[in-house]
Image (cartoon, rainbow, N blue to C red; front, side, top):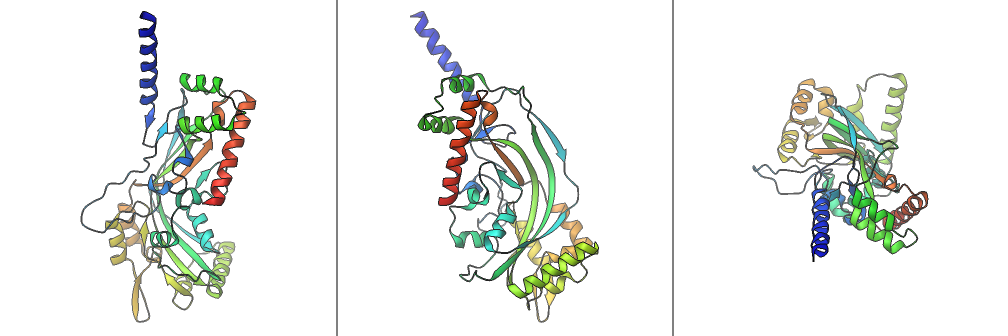
Amino acid sequence: MFLWFLAVFFCCGLCESEEGDLSYSLNIGNAIDVFANYGDLSQVTQVVSANYEEGDNVVETELFHEKNIRVFENVTSKETPGDPGIDMNILLCESFEDLLAKYFQNFKIEGTEIPWKAFLGDWIQDEIMRTFGMEFDLERDNCCYVLVKLSKTHKTVKMNVDNNIRSKEYVRREINSLNASDSTAVRRFMKSYGTHYIDSFVTGNFIYQVFKYKRPGYNLLKAYIKVREQRKSNFGNLRFYFSSYFLKQVGEIRIASGNKRIERWARNNLLDSQYLYSRPSLLRVHYNPILAYKLNEMLDNEALLGLNLKILGPLFKDRYKREKYREIVENDMKLWEVNA
């Protein structure tokens, strides 16, 4: 009877220990199962503009609310504060898929070459276009895109990984009993303890706008930017290449955190007058230091600017188990990538 009681007590203590290591917030070194929300990770990470209805109510957002578990005992990290000012980037995109790749260029998931599919792969085309402030348009052939981003980095956090990193005791027990040759057993382990760990992340906020180009106009802009970069001169005539003569569509200004108050401010204050009409354009910030200062004050720490997920190889001290685990995770990633 005493032995039975002791066994129950031990098991309960183990469960409580595992439950204590579970979290839904952003924790460096913690493990997640990428496949749990593959194709829709944007619903559990704040990386694109929210689609909730506009109004005066402030909607709180969470940077990260995916289930994760602490699998390492001795995780340490290094935190670097961001630049207090905003940074402007003009990203040239040869196609719509290239636009998605450029938007998620600071998001890395080991085992896949197309990280954006993990975030938006399950979304229909119309939903993705709305998220980028664009009207749905079947005409995509021979069209190019330019993504203008104004970013403000709050902090960068990176995990310190060394040879002495140790896994939690209950995780070690599961690994010791794991038959790595049994793919079904490995996938059960993946569901319980994850496929990847959070190696680094960047937080802050950024505001963005997409411009859809006719191919000739895009090529002229591309050549202009290349010459200016080679000469290391400013982009004084940049506005000309964003005129209606070259464009097929101008997207609405969006913000990664989904903060509708800032989006409304941008629509009302970043108007660019061309010919007989005006339209919001992020380029106004490039030419107006006062607007840049005001926008810089509003951008807060409400979104993920970057995320690096690495396969849970460091958990496995046994080389054979480590390689088999990586192989199964990478193969599954490629299958999900193709089917997303």
